[in-house]
Length: 562
Image 1 (cartoon, rainbow, N blue to C red):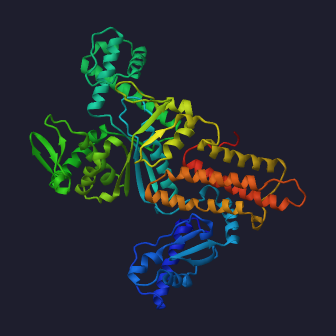
Image 2 (cartoon, rainbow, N blue to C red; image 1 turned 90 degrees about the vertical axis):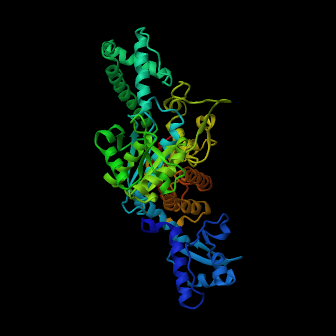
């Protein structure tokens, strides 16, 4: 079993069906037709086999034939390899496949041999992909709502790497623009107020308690130095100190949930290093810029947008959109990424179409840019819904949440739903130390596996030569077949950008392992059970590989004991 994208059993079966269709046509069994894709599913009921295809039903109209006859013709031409034990036809027109049991059990040795690279694919073929996520304005600590995009982006990057892409993780630091100016002014006002200076807060300033705490830190180190500077110089200097401190806090908070970045990209550099000017010049050259009402506009209506978008206000100040244009010019033209995935918050929903228009304007396919929008999280504390705002100060920080429920619960629960769905973070369940909590349930399975292997070591049981052909119990076979889904899950998540499936697969794998553990005594002291013990220990060891990979990709701990 090669560990590349062809090791995805579902894809292999789809390939064999396609080959069978060509063979059936060449033999005159079926008429020639064009097909877009070959459906292959995993049936819900075991009696329907491990895989099934509804292709005959799909072809019936074009071929003007009974789907059962189509299915019979295709089934007669399927060759496959040693992995397939049986192929049969089922009404009203399905082709069913069951895996060969002797092949299934041999995969235990394959999984153990591959270890930490089991499930790795060559789907991406080394294409460069930038995943930009979080990118919250550094004007305050991360609140719990930001965690969803952070964890989704982090897990997605892990999945894409496993699928063979060259991934760069990036945080776009919005250190220019109006919000940064408001933060600088707010921090300076709080600093002055510590010295009883009459300095009002900006009308739309940041009023959270953390701004006062930050001002106190700066006062304790710098004393009253900034009171003796011209106001503009003082605001700029104290603001830059505050910016550095906030970035340190953000990095620290993200590290608590296993989120890290290859690059922290400064918005200011777009202006300082010329990307802004180059991108604006390119839009002008392509004829996508016009002046009216004293402002400079991107004529996105000529590219299918409902309205044009302002690049530079009448005051001469570039908009956030202009910065986005320059930033994506940098990503695609200067750094030449094959693909870019932006994970943005719900407030960016309206930006998608205009960013697609920008791609066309800079001569890049809009398909190379994917914008994933994460919806709002409702955070429940008892029966009370808590609103989170950096300006009002009424917020629950990510750091506070981690300290209460732990990093693993944060990652799992935020990852458990697709980003476009609304979600409610269940605080009580996240802290529950029972099998009702999927985090506890999965990690307990891993800890149980580790304890079994430790017991075997303590008893000096060498299971390296264990005979996997002895793994005939239905619970053992179910566990192996569940593990064989792992490469398939990786491929599906990478293609669809849906890492949330990993939480569901991990839960199913843990459930299947717990069932095997209940049904099959692993380490037996009974005379005559030595060989079955060794075989089952091999299976347990393989289970540790796959469940460990799941936890690793979710950046969760794999505990040896609980």
